[in-house]
Image (cartoon, rainbow, N blue to C red; front, side, top):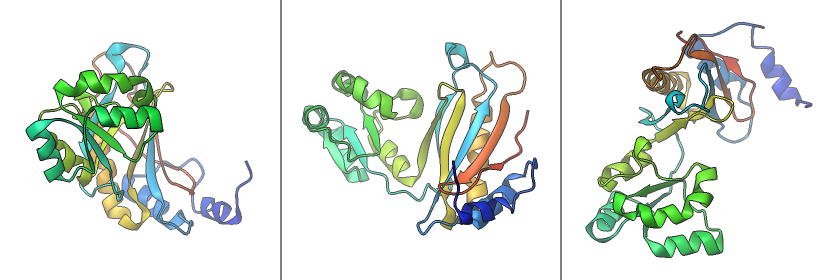
Length: 228
């Protein structure tokens, strides 16, 4: 893949083969960002586990201390007082069957996260084939199936992110925007990594974090040090 001049200039700032600490890495990422928009900074963490085995899954959710810099649109499946709580907490869309129809018939996806009360999972379950592949299906492990919908909505708005392994045993997660600056990005990154270390499965053998790379949307990747 041919890269532009700005990308090639950015790469020159990296020392070949060097693995940086999080502070240095985020400083480089912000310096190398060259797009005309506020680029998202993402982490790509390869783990020494096998996601095909149920006892080696790594999944969870955390609220980043400095948020993600993204305006999050929330859809909540709830009824009665819980629906009122969700609306009061700031959810953009709150309802039940009408949203199932809107998603399935109109291919409507003007939302970034889906939250549901446990009693609504029978309704939401009908959307499994649609929401699942997009990573939008509510799940108790990520705190998106809960009776405390107000808390879930507020956390989502505050910068809660979900992390989970893909088929290649890699976790891809945003940790903020270039405009945050190196310190806030490093703080978000360390919070994410701490959660991933705590989520280490008992069945995992050998080196847990095999590699970690951070990069802005259009910038080159920077290798970051990780613990064993």
